[in-house]
Length: 243
Image 1 (cartoon, rainbow, N blue to C red):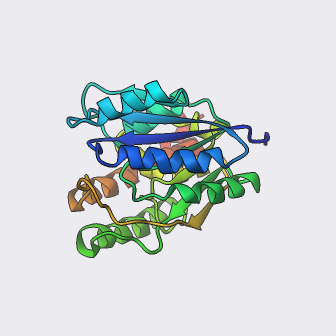
Image 2: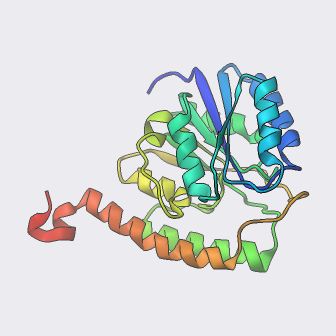
Image 3: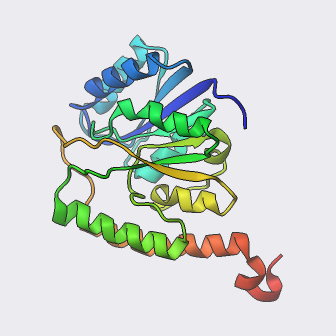
């Protein structure tokens, strides 16, 4: 595994105009304190507020800021995939654009990458979200994902993660696949760990998630299970047509 020299931070954004400047300020402070070159990649997922104008201004003022813009809302998985493909860093860090992920956890993620892990996943152990509409559905989904895939994590839905470039560039994403990336990566031998990260209350804007999304996530789990079985045991899945 190569030495880390550069890092890319990928941030999907959808209607987060009030959060972007504070997030950029916090993030830049943390990244400047680290011994790595860095870039910040915002992926505007078809925002209908002033998010893109704010991002465009940040990119003009800071050459380390890059902006990808979608013409319409394609969803977080598509935004993350675009960021992965554009990123140049040896390590790619993903985080939400709503200020609930704490940039000060990034050094802890990188410490684990330096220990030899390919993916480091955040665990929002003390989560600052409504219990019935966010925390309870998430707990159910995490339990099901862990049981179905065999990759046991407390918090698949936490966007704050670190990936080695070689792993992130290998993903082919669709649907809501972004939340299953550790399970997908495990199928091709990635070494994965989980650390407790800070989680902050949402101050501005509103959440884009809810119970309805949990149902879609559960349906996608079985697609991930099928793909993993095919990658690991194609003869078992397709009989004599497997290779």
